[in-house]
Every structure is written in C-alpha cells, then in structure tokens.
Image 1: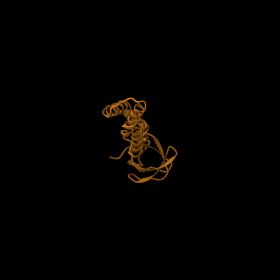
Image 2: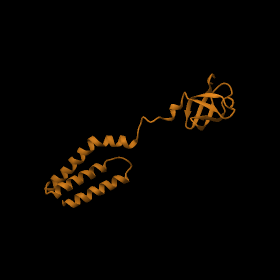
Image 3: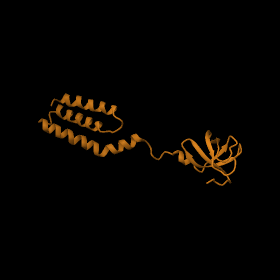
Image 4: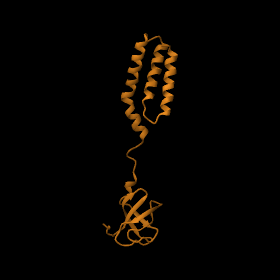
Length: 149
C-alpha cells in the first residue's frame, strides 16, 4: 500500500479517536498507521501483508504499555477529596431547626441544606457536627447532642 494511504489512515484514526468517549483505542492504531506510513515512505515494509503485520504489532506495542496510563490520567485524580470528607466537620446553624427538620447551616464559608439528626432542636448560631452527607444535604447534630435513631 502507498505510504500516503497509511498516513491518511493514521490521521483518520486519530480524528476518529476525538469522536469517541475516552476509550483510547483508535489513537494507538492511528499511531501504528503513521509509523507504517513512515516505513513505507522510506521504502521499508514491502509486501502488503508485512505492512499490515507491522501495523498491528506497532499499534499493540503502543497500546499495551500506554493505554492504562492514559485512561487513568484522563479520568482524573481519584484521591481528590470527596464530599464525604465533610463528616466530622463543624457547621454553624443559620436557622432554628427542630429535631428531624431541615434548615440551613454554614460550613466552609458556604450555605448548606442541613437536616437535624439530633434528639433536640438546634438554635440559630449553634455549632453542630456533620454526621452524614446525603447528596447536598448535611445531617448534623449539636456538638454535645445525641443522634436520633
């Protein structure tokens, strides 16, 4: 196959990788096609079956050591703090909240929806401890309060 067809195939596969959601498969086959196109341009890799074999070997040689790292990098840092790290933090009540009711609390400079999980009411300005995070709702108890069952 002509060298420019390999290069065209390589760029087409690289472009197709941009249209797929992060699988990182077409990328390596695109790189393999570009490498084979370079070999064909230099006059190496005759006959066609050898070029196809080289295409497969080069693509797999790129894919096996690099794909896992790329997928891990693309998914982001898994050690980033999650919302669950709010458990045990101290929030200040912005409303008077009776037992089991929902109100507002301030935590880390932001206003949150807070559900009173304490057996007693929480007063505005009272400090409370986050015991659970459910979506964007903090479950709180007074600093010396008992949790309701």
